[in-house]
Image 1 (cartoon, rainbow, N blue to C red):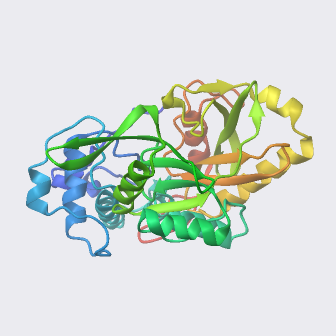
Image 2: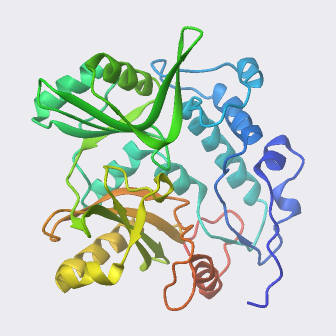
Length: 366
C-alpha cells in the first residue's frame, strides 16, 4: 500500500522495560495490539505479573519464584487464570504508555481486549445488549456442582470452557443421561510424580468413566471455567459446522465455514473449511441477513475495537443462531478474501479511513 513496514515491539521487550511505547509511537502512528503468541518467556512474564494480582482464593496460583522455575513443556496448560490476570496488567501498562503518545490511531482498546478474553464477562456483556448467546449455567467450581446445575437447569449437554482459554484450549463437551457419561475434549490428562497435569492436544480425547471426567472438570475448575448449554450445530456436507465471522469497523466482512465431525470446529484440530456459497444456497436470505445483523450488533458491543472475530453457531434448520465467542485476535484467516483483499489489508484500509487520530488521553472509538 506504499507505507513503510510496521515496527514490531515484542511483549518480552515491553514487559522487561527494554522498550517503552512513547519512544516508538509517533504522531500519526497506527497501533495494533496483537496476541502474545506462543512464547514461553512471555508466558512466564505474564504469569509473574499475575502472581501479584488479587483474585478469588478458589483459583490455583503460582508464586513469582515458582514461575521463574518453570520449565517449558510443549502443550502444557499452565495456570490460565493467572496468565489472564497478568495479561490484564500488561494491557494496563500498554494503555498507560499510550496515554503519553499523542495523535495516534489505536486499532483495539486494551479494556475491550480484556473483556473479550473473559468468556463469562463477554457473554454476559453480549446478552445484556440483546445479542443471542447460549444459555449459561452460572459459576461452577467442581464436577459435583456442575452436575447439580445441569439437573436444576434440565440441561444434560454442556460445554465447559476455560474462562480465559483460546483455540479450544481446555474445552470439554460433556453429556450424560444420568447413567452414561461422555466428555470429548482437547485436554490430555497425564499423571507425573503423583501430580495431574493437563496438556493441549491436537487429537480429541473421549472420557467415559465418571471418575476421570470428574477429575478433568475439577482440575479445569481450579483455573476458572465458563459453562454453557451445548446447542446442536447445523450440518453441511455430512459434517457439523459453525462460522468464524470477522467484523471490521462494525461491518461483516470475511467469513469462514468450519466443518467438523466432532463438537469442536477449530481448524487447527484438522477440521476443514467449507464453501460459504453452498451454505447460502441452503439458508434463506432473510436468515443469513439475521446472522449478519447479529454479528454487527455484537461488534457494536465493542465500539473501541476496529475488528473482532465472532464464532457463530447456526442451529439445525438454518433459522436460529447464536454468538458462541468474541475473539479479540480472531482475524488470522489465511487465504480468505472479501472484496478482493485479505483481513489485514481490509483492517489497514479501515483504520486509515477513520476520521481523526486518537488524541492524548482520549478513548474515542474508530
